[in-house]
Length: 223
Image (cartoon, rainbow, N blue to C red; front, side, top):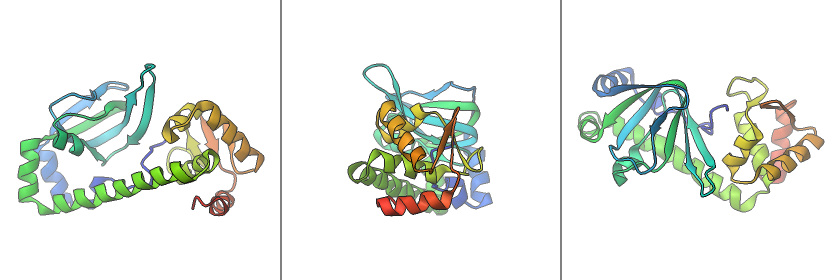
């Protein structure tokens, strides 16, 4: 599926080249194959990780054994700073395609933050943007219909991945993302199709007119 980053700039975008080079110098390089676990929820060995190549998917296993996708992160994005505070990882993380991770353990990270204040500022700015996105998702879940939430997700990701006029995804992934059943997403998708806002296909959703979708979102209170 196209990256579920909700237009949040990765940590790399906040850093100068000299800071990035120093972080790479102190990091441990780890390579993963497609689908390989980077870590499991509850594992110790907490560390700050940065996606150098490829992507990672985050989620939790439900009581019925199904995997609930929460997000995906691509090159330049970071994760693991919450685990450093809790001393254990809070999510299951898997590689998407061949992936390289640069891992910085707690002691090296403390030294970097002490020596490079710019890194601390960058982490603060990036995490603030993430918090704002999470709060917006929470507010959407409380105030918007499933159809409006689905339309908003499609609008945000259209043109940001491999498809210039849509997103590459499965309906199951969209259902996992907004926290509803696949049946509910299917019903909402049909409603959007009847309105001429989207067209669903095999592993993809296309948007014939993104401006029209944005106008619909405004009238629905989602934009």
